[in-house]
Length: 289
Length: 250
Image 1 (cartoon, one colour):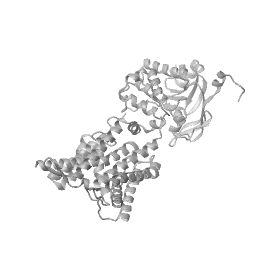
Image 2 (tube, one colour):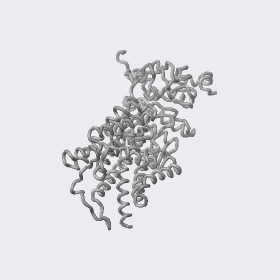
Image 3 (cartoon, one colour):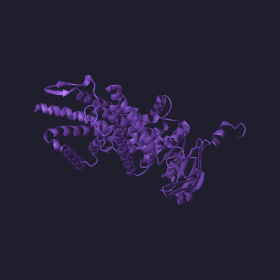
Image 4 (cartoon, one colour):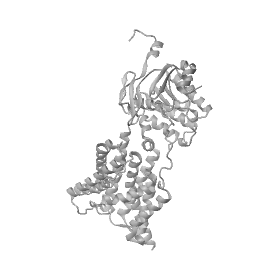
């Protein structure tokens, strides 16, 4: 009993932290650009596929972890500059249609290029095998994923709260026009945030690609979970996304212990409860002017 | 160009901002009609008029936030209409909006740092000057700006507009709005100091016409998107009839 709870806790934290990497970008992009980015799951999936290609080609997981997210960042830059930028003044419906279309295109391209069968990113020997965590034998790789995601989320958190760039992001999310009138080219900030979100999703793709299967449906699979997280945490709130991701991760893991077939139902019930109690989400728009 | 003008004369005639026959729309509604005005370097110019006359839109047009559909706007002779707001800010035009719009979730220091970072090179001298000028902000560096009083937020909004690229002209939109009379006097004092000591030209939009006209050198009255009066500020202030018919001041 203790063993399975401990195992579920570790698993839940790991799942939560990797989901946080994905949800963070989604919520930051919404908070600043006012865009609901349905292509975010596809960017995560691209990270995983780029990871399989690089790891396969050069035999190095580490190179994949470094390069694949940067490549996803480039794709993100292209999406933002070429397709979203001309539509910022339009009704949000345009953004949804556009990003949904891009998600389908990316999925289609992946099936064309790499086929529909599942793949996996081979993990290095250093990270294979298991290690004893108390009474539990836990995969080293999963601990590694937990560690890397936690450190990354911590760095991003600090950067948003403390750095000049983070302050700029907070200000732009609050009042874009004012920021622009202070002499800042906000379109560059927008591109930066979109690319940054894409890179985080790409990292999550490579990390999870080492433990889960990489397949063309994974993008749409993850986007639902990520949206639930963003809604529970409060649209646009980074802090909220991180807490909500941990909550979702743990509920999923514990739910799997109790009633494996019902875990998705738990997520929707949780979202419904949060929305009924606090429609703006746990950390949503409480500090708006 | 006239020959060897004296320094005084030259300063008096240098046109800093020239707005020439602009028409500005919000969507389908026509707000400004062939509006022209001129601001010389070193002046305080008041733009007064009733609610909805187009005062705010005039400032937004100059700042590039609501670009005019036609007409020209020049700064020191160079056209600026059609530029992005951030490019206009880099040309020395700075804006303090209605309701101040400080970044409420950020501290005073963070608000200022954000603006200072848009300037070139090390801005620490400018920071020192700003805190000398606004000791209240110095005391409240670490406070979230959203929790400050209206007067303090107004000071922060002005301070923020002065940091970053050099400010030649400040566009001030309703700085006295919602402030206690004592604080309105403080704000008026700040505006006068900025103009006299720091050579910042001021375009002041005000509902509080008397406060604005007492400060200003020159005045424009705006009515339904058109300039209906243009004179030295004291002339308008002394013309009780004009004051009453344009501004409802008895």
